[in-house]
Length: 130
Length: 117
Image 1: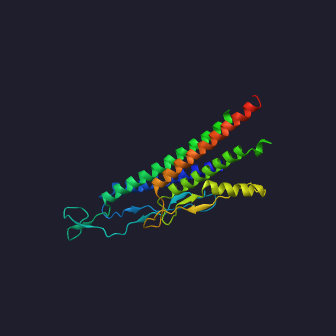
Image 2: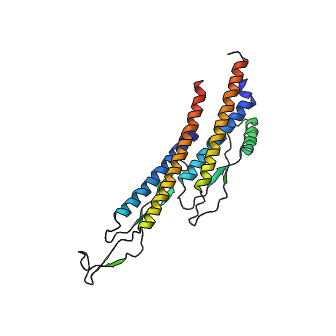
Image 3: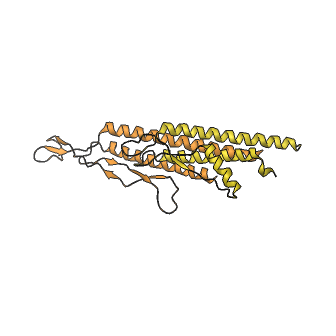
C-alpha cells in the first residue's frame, strides 16, 4: 500500500512540475512584445530534503535566457533611443508553443499513470469486499 | 496453515512485484524532463521471485527490489526516459497486478467452496 501512495505522490509531483512549466510558458507568451523581456526557462530537479518522496520531481530555480535581445528599429516607439531603435524581447513563439505541447504531453503521461495506480489500488481494495 | 499455500504466495508476490514496478514507472515519468536522470526498471518477476523464496526460507520476508537501468538511448541532457516505453511498462504492470488479484480471488473461492461456505 505504501508503494501505491508513494507512487501517487510522485505522479502528482510530476503534474505539479509540468503545470509550473506551463505557467512560465504562458508568462513568456504574454510578454512576447514587452521591451527588454528575457524568456524564462524551467528546469527540473529531483526532490530532496526532509520528508521528500523518493523519485519525486520539482522545478528548480527559474533561469532567464541570456540570448541577446533583438534590436528593433522604430523611431515612433516611446522607448526608442536617439538612434530610433529599442530592445525587444527574446521570446520565440514557435519555441514556446513547442514547449507548451511537450509540457502537455508529459502532464498527460503523469495523469495516465496516476489513474492506473488508482485503479490498481481500487482493485486491491475490492478483494476485501467479498 | 493457509499461509503456506503456494498459490497465495505466488499471487501475493506477483501483486507486490507489479506494484513496485508501477511505482518505478511513476518515478520515471515524473522525471521525464530532469537532466541526467536514467530510466529505471525492476528486475523480471522470475528473478525477484527466486530471490523472494530464497529469502523467505532464510526467515527474511522482505523482498529485495533490484532496480536495473533500462537501456534506452539518452537525450542530449542525459535523460533516458521514453514516455512511450513507460506507458507500455505501466500497462504491463497493471495487467500483471489484476491477473495476480484475479488468481488470488479465485483461489480464495475454491478454498471457501472446499470448506463448504
